[in-house]
Image (cartoon, rainbow, N blue to C red):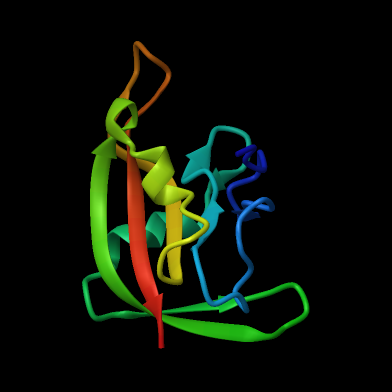
Length: 120
């Protein structure tokens, strides 16, 4: 999944379902920050807790609400892509950004922060 370079823009995995489909994971992703653009809105994901509401506003101004199930830091090497990008399971929202400590030697964050939520 290609991510927009500006953390203020959130990408949608176009090969997955849309927010109106009744199966599979809608996947959104973006950078948490960048030297060029600063901190983006996904930096607030860390504040979410199970039971919180997440409201997604689409480019056509329609909104869809989800209830957060989990907020997890997952090592990039351990991210179960078949689970994240599931096209056939229950309808879910997955939002992915950088997580964990910043690795100055590696030039990036060690983990992915993954929020999983279900439609309300």
